[in-house]
Length: 141
Image (cartoon, rainbow, N blue to C red; front, side):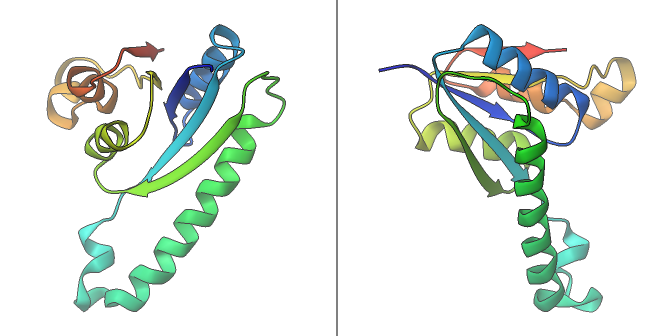
């Protein structure tokens, strides 16, 4: 049985590169593309449309994630199985939670390449995942 490689994805060029890297370096392993839908307090705030607005927004976010998966895997030749998953929450925490709940052997994640004050103020999802992951993490630039 092959290994399972988790690739957290968004619409960035770094996510596309992570998919390309994983499919090249791990050609026979199964790839799991994970997209995290991040709720915003403004979406769930009752004064800004409340749950009705949030439900519509979330359904659209899931549809957008399905489109993203198609774009990221278009033209990718891979021997192993490619599956997708959608979850929600804070990206780094949701990725680490997914690792705890699923049989994953490695993570391949794109880096946005933030440095200096931007990295300190905003943080880095890839850095947080690498620090907290129970499995090896490859960060692709």
